[in-house]
Amino acid sequence: MLSSVPQQRSSSILSLPSNRISQASLSAFSSQLYHINRKLIVKKNYQGILINCALAKVKNSPSPNSDILVKERHKYFDEVIITVRAGDGGHGAILNLPSQNGSAKSVGIFDKARTKKKASYKRDFDGSIILPVGGHGGDVIIYADESKDTLLDFHKKSRYNAKRGGNVDAMGVFSSQTRSGLAAPVLRIPVPLGTVVKQKRGKLLADLAQPGDEVLVAKGGQGGISLLELPEHRRNKMMDFTTNILRDDSDKVLAVGRPGEEVSLQLILRVVADVGLVGLPNAGKSTLLAATTLAKPDIADYPFTTLMPNLGRLNGDPSLGAGQFSSAATLADLPGLIEGAHLGKGLGRNFLRHLRRTRLLVHVIDAAAEDPVQDYRTVKEELRMYNPEYLERPYIVVLNKIDIPEAMERLPNLTAEIWKIGCDVMELQNDDTSGREASHLANDSDQIDIDSQEKKVKTIEEYQRPLAVIGVSVLTGIRINEMLKEIRVALRSCQ
Image 1: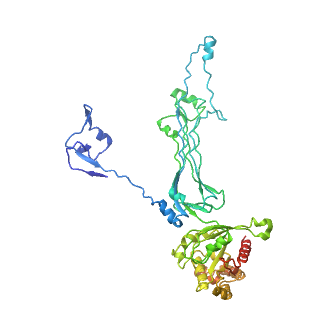
Image 2: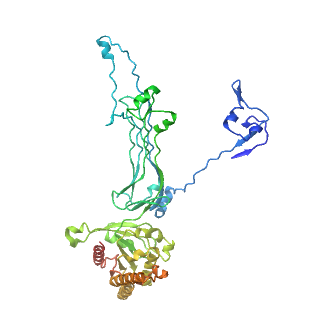
Image 3: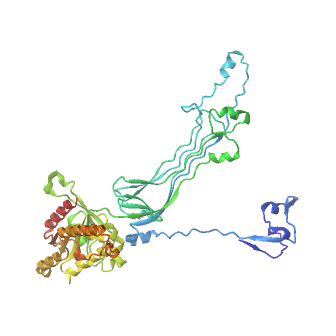
């Protein structure tokens, strides 16, 4: 920012003559200064220019400290923004050919022994001389690692830099011993399975859903080339052997290594599971997971005990013999949903995206609640409002806590009322077929109503019925094997 300053006599302010103030160039300013006895003297009665410089600070979102990460892990475990920078390329070199001035006369055997052999350079297939180059900068690769389960570590360290390539190791003279710079190693960053890698502006780069999946997110810079500095009378001759000859000072930029790419990435974790357990808080989802797998989630008698998705491995079907090992499945226990979860109430909206990879949903309903059917409708409605595709997936309804006498008495009525909510699969297929035929007829007659083309919003009664409705008591182990059998049969039908 430039601003005019009143006339001053202080010698501490750099000044310019008033008649030249509009031409505030470096040459005009330096011409007014002169040295006397090694001291810088500035003429008086000048009008000065005050230059105020301000550094722009980059506004970064504050990263949570370690205490917050421990207390509120559920807010940070599945999403983070990081910055990665690939390594710069190594620099080339400006080289001179060794001097070939030697005495033409050779006297005696000892002089011949002291005569150096003519240097032999590495050459390409066409006979051109191969000059050394700077090393390639390190690339940055993000890969899926089974040993990782959260993205919390990236909140502690959000910037990753790969190493730069090595420079050409030369002392200014080109010889057969001159080597190229070493390439920098690749920086590999592990992330949990199911991590979605996006650019900060939203462009999808990769979905790392399987072990070993990887994506190159930043490329390292190319190394600079080496140039030969020769006198003019030797340039034309050397042009037959190489084109990397320094013609003027502007060519020196070719010896500088190229910078590596720097990108900001958004990492989003979507849990990889075959079965998703959904329901209202305190319905018994964590207890069901602990009873059927080796997982040990937090279990308590108050709602919202589960703050993060818990995963457990369900063993395969023993009746399949050797095929039981390939029929194993992963169960995911999600935090409880409440009414308005799709709008951000409670913890549901933050974790509903973890259902995208599931093949089967298990609705866990508290059969001893005041109105279990309304609880079941609430959960289905929240799923429909968040993503209607969730209701198109096969699902099972588990009525939990039937060890309570009141729940056991009304179990038949609850099962019948839940079966009434929804349609059969055959009815849905027939409706889709008739809808497609009607659309074709409308296209043939050129009588298409724009409003009719809009997709009709379905209610929860217009989606398919559950594959099974079973009453269990997870805490006491009542009918657990029957529930596992229904889950395994449903999983086989989803393949």
